[in-house]
Image: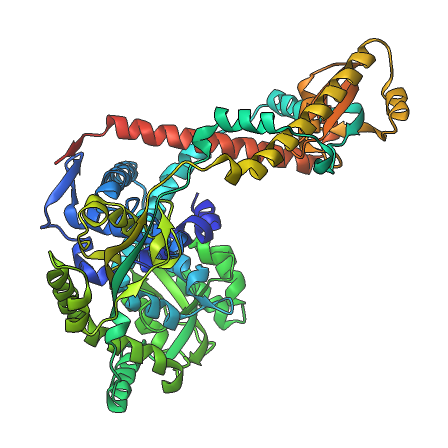
Length: 621
């Protein structure tokens, strides 16, 4: 089971790790993530979910949406109240799983946590675990190593719980046979294609037809109401000031001081955890004697170590800058020279023989490589309180004032003017749903007032005032006649093709063959023998329509299908065959079986989670 978790760790857990690191935990206080004392919003079997946890979950989801939308997102979707319900339900579901994993006695050892961390690509450089990268990512989020390990342990416990449920599924030989017969079905297919006319100009459309279409669809020919606005924009970058060279140097040194030690050690170990102390100590001493007599450490680790995660790698745990492993382990590792093996060492997870594989100096970033980043950080930190102050002033000065000019003069801002945009939005700022909502709101549009302060991003706000408004109106027939003519020509072209196809299908019913009809109408026809379900070479619509006939044996049936481009295809199906399971080799059967089991496993795991949720004592406060 643990190996199954390890195989999947680079997918789900790695994504969780990256998502967690992306959240500015410092805004909320990291330690409170794992401590009580906060107001509870729910209880699951007596265990609390705090308001702080919920706020963090909402912020995580909000930032995920913004990142995926690349900044252009409907603010109503990321409104806190909109996200609150789903976020709380997600926390409740997670808490339910945590409780179930604990009750099931699922434990994740420290050594396995260590191996997961060192093997996670998120923390690797050039395929090797980088302690500097690990420490840097955690430091950037304000997340401590112990807190991160605790979160990772919870994730692994939940994954092991759900994997245990999902992995219990199996597939019967009869089911494999049924699936093979379905997926390997084949048929014999004759068909000819009647192409839609390319020269639409040749299709006549009368003025009466255009008039009738316009009257029948008059609601489709309305202009959109549009507005243009004057606006004041305040971004934190507008308040940046130059930073003294000395301050940049001091900040750079502080970064270096916060980085992990410059020495990084690569460790391997042989671990015993199932024996009592005396037996483990005796066994490790015997193994050390074998090493003294020339035995290979990696081979002994593969044969004897009970850390399944590292045993296959010869006990290799990767690099540590002094805090990736337990304290006793790190202390012993620090005393070794490359190639040396320690005496037996005891930690909370068991007994170890530790070998130092390599020592390297960690690279330190140069001042020039960090200069721009540090300068922006210092500028932002200095501008943050000023931005809050200016934003409040902007809100106060534009509240109930006549236009934006007074506020612009007081705050040294420029009144800008937008292009016209509709309720579906415009470009840049005016694709933001909060701006659109305010522009077409009653205060701005009807009462000619300034908007309230609109937050585009946490450090980017605008205030808008109506400039010009154009109401929606009914378009004249003359404005849309050419557009309607194109629509009617396309419709007529499709109708002509379909009518011709139906006539040919009727002729086939009277005894004509596809070959004869194709030759008489100067069309090409095709024969495909052994076309398989989902196979290439013909249009997807044709393939689906052919198998939808569900004929068997040598029976022949005919039909037609319209393609997305307007063409019509008349076809005949014969020699319909189910796929025999014998045609599949062992690897194919194994793949199909695995896919079935995975699909069922997901369904069973989802049902199991829902059952746990239904049985849990959940109290929303």
